[in-house]
Each structure stands twice: as C-alpha cells, then as structure tokens.
Length: 186
Image (cartoon, rainbow, N blue to C red; front, side):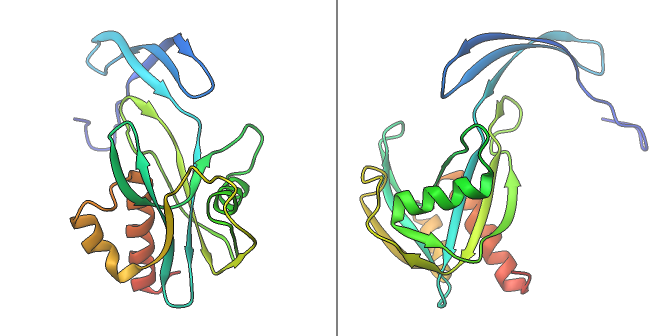
C-alpha cells in the first residue's frame, strides 16, 4: 500500500525472451517489488487487437455466432482482429468488420481502449463503434462466423446472463456502448 501522495512501483531490471512467433511472445521479466523482493515474472505479449461494434438505426448491433476451439464453446462476438504492423487500429477494425461480416461501417468513432488480463498478459484491445453500415458483399472470412445477426442492445444483459456473450472484448464493448448510449454521450 502506498503512502498518501507517494506511489510505489515495481522496478523492471530486464526482460529475457523465451518464446517468440507471429502470435505470441513469452518473456521472463526480472522485477523488484517496492519492498525489495526480486524475482522473475512470466509475461505474455500479444499483438494489439481492434474490435468494431456496428449499430443500426434501431440500436441493434451486428454480431457473429462463432465457435472458439480453445474452450469448445459457442458465443456471440463482435467482428475484430489483430492490428497488423504499421496499420492504424481504426483501419483494422473497419477491415475486419468488412472481411468478417460483408458490411462497411459508417461514422466510426473510438469508444475505449483496455487491457483484458493485466498482471501477466499485454494484449491491448481498441474498441470502435459505427453508426450504420453499408452491405458491400458476402463475408470474405467465411470461417469466422457460423451466422450473423442484428442483436438489440436491450437483449445484451440477458444474453450475458445466459452465457451467450462471454468474450472479454465483446463484453467490454457492448457494456460500455450501452452505458454511453443510456447517458447520451454517444
């Protein structure tokens, strides 16, 4: 616990890469706690991700029903993906929405940026929303979703309670968006 007016932080003395590929980088970081205790801490580095919430005029959001093999579980998700090197996060969110849904978002704006697993994992997620979209064709990424649907935002809390929406990026995006819409700030 820090004294009032004085913050204490962990000191990083170095980082040693253990594993590195296109999808994940695992490192051991030499850290020292404010009390002087020093040890190596595992850290997972993932590329940044961008996610798009597209709303229509009836406050319905375009979502994808998809399977996640790691958990052998189905759920509703927003389109999104990893930000390519040198690519702008907003451009990634728009590109992923087009590829995964066949819709081109209109009126894009940044909603929120967050880290879903602080402590051991660096995986920044950048969330955007769009007011409307133009159907430009069929999805290019046909393995991303089993089906697409326009889901009323009013249904989101019950879908979360039933376990139909469980992905952290989708949860944060939809809950934040509902809050902003309810407060009139979006």
